[in-house]
Structure formats: structure tokens, C-alpha cells
Image 1: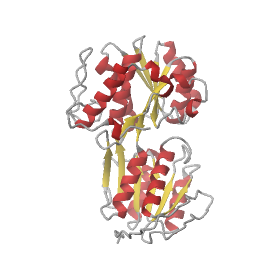
Image 2 (image 1 turned 180 degrees about the horizontal axis):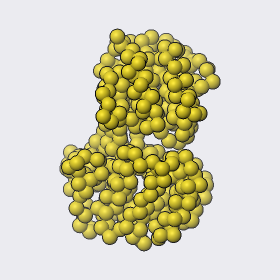
Image 3 (image 1 turned 120 degrees about the vertical axis):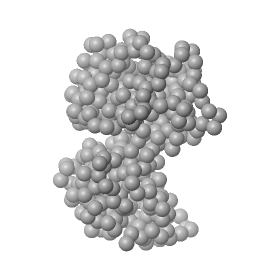
Image 4 (image 1 turned 45 degrees about the vertical axis):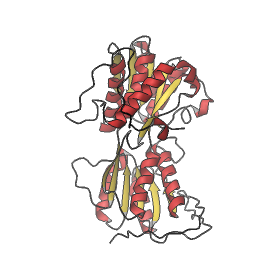
Length: 375
């Protein structure tokens, strides 16, 4: 049986999170004896990659500190490491394990089925068509909502009326990002031409650079990167050429553009952000509190699961009217009065174009962006 009791410890502790070097977490006070937390990264990064792996680690670290959990992460260097690292964490008695990203979906489902006494949390994993065991929490994001908002900004910022998306593999999360971006742009600018290329690769910087150049040759003056390291390289290159760019998943001005310290940092407008940290924290919280959210945890604008990053160095280039428009769109999506047409649901159709100079209707009780905005 899975343990579902929460031991209340009133003295705060400091947990040092070990990596794959087998360092033991240090604690100044007692740890919760019922739960031990682990995390396994995918092969596309580390806990300092500025992407999903790092964000998941931040959420796990926050939960470890608040709920007094022993916590250790493991770095995967190739796909064989997934099984090796999961086996090692289970052997250590870790009974809450976070796995990061779509590449780990199959192995996470396999391990959840074969280890019913361990809870698994799969970031960006939905197990389509599969029966989900009660000890598995999948996590999906309304990527289309985040990209719809930044797509609207792209539709407003373009002067050539051509914008573009560098996509990775043509999988559901990436398709939602690309189509949400397109529909958001068309919502505010029905004349815009949106170019979309699925590169089929998340880890090919040279391909990202070439794809960006191809888009520039076709007149694109705003490029959205949604392809992992392929996209990172593509928008870095485009920004150096003076093209506006938009990041994905995390605040790429802070990560990919190193907080404004590299060339082109003044050309990144914003990023479509998935709050992986919030999702991981919420899932762990549900387990240790005795009410595990088995199944799929859906994170959207209404739950502060998706948002967009600050404009940073581009703040003076984004008009007050466009900033107001983005916030109104975000709040309307959160309230459910506006839909992207890119969620994948059969009845979800793109909205009619917004009348020039107007804002979408925002209910008075709609969530406030300030409660969810990435700082």
C-alpha cells in the first residue's frame, strides 16, 4: 500500500539536493520519514539547462524544503540511463519520483505499472490511449494558451506581415504551440502569413540556425522557437540578424540569452512560459497531503500553469496598447470566454478576428495576470 500520511514537522530544515554524484542530502533537522523524493532528467539537459529539467528541479526543491523531504536528482546522459537511474532511485527507497519530458513517457508508464508502491510524476506526459495506474500523475500544459498570447504580440509587431515558428518534433505539445501561435497572430492580424516548420529534432543547433535563415529569406521578421536546443540556436541567430524573436517554456531572455549578456538580447520580445515548477510542486503536495491527483494534471492560464515572460530589453518597443491587449487576452483565456482553436479538442475552433482597436471582453472575476506572471 502507498503511504498517504503526512508527518507534521514544525521546525524548518535545510535540504541540499544531491546530483548523480551520489552525494547524500544534508539536513539540519528531521526529515519526513514517510516520503523520499527523486527526479530523473531527460537527455536533453540538466538541472541547470534553463528548460524543463531545471524548472522541474526548482519545483521539486521547493517541495522538498516545504515538506521536509529527502531529495536527490539524477542526470541522464543517454536513453539507457533512464532505466539505470530509475532503478537506482527506487533501490534507495525513493517513493516519489519525477521524470521530465515527453521522451520519458514510455519508461515512466512502465515503471509506474511495475512499482505500485512508488508515486511517479511525469512532466509533459499524457499517456494517450493508455490506462493510467493510480500511482502515476501525468502533467500536460495548455501550451496553446501561452503561445496564443505571444502569437498575438507577434501579429502586432510584424511589419512584413510574415512571422514564423521553428518547431521540433511534430508531437502534440509542439503542434499546440505552433497552432496556438498562428491562431493568436491571426486573431489580431488576419492578414499575417505564419510559416511553420517542424524540424523533427530538439537537439540540432545547426538545423535551427538554417531554419531561421530560411524564414528570414522568406521575409519573416518575428520568429518563435519551439524546438528545444534547435529552437534556441535558431532564435539566437535570428536575433543577431536584427529579427524579433520569442522564446518558449522558460524565460529565454534569462536562460538562452543569459540575462541580456549576449548579442541579440535586445531582440527577444517575450517567451511562452510553462510553469513546470508549479506543476511539480502541486503534484508533490497532493501526494504528501494524502490526496494524490492521480491521472492527468492539466495546467492552463486559469491555474497559473502557463503565462508569458516580461519584455525585458524590448519593453520600450512594446506599446502600452499591445501590453494591455496581451493581458486582456490572457485573462479572457483564463476565464474561459476566449479559446485558442488549437487545444486539440474537436469542438475548439479558432476565434473570429478581433475588431481593430478593441479588446476581448474580460469578465470582472477573471484571474489576474499579476497573480501568475513570471517575474
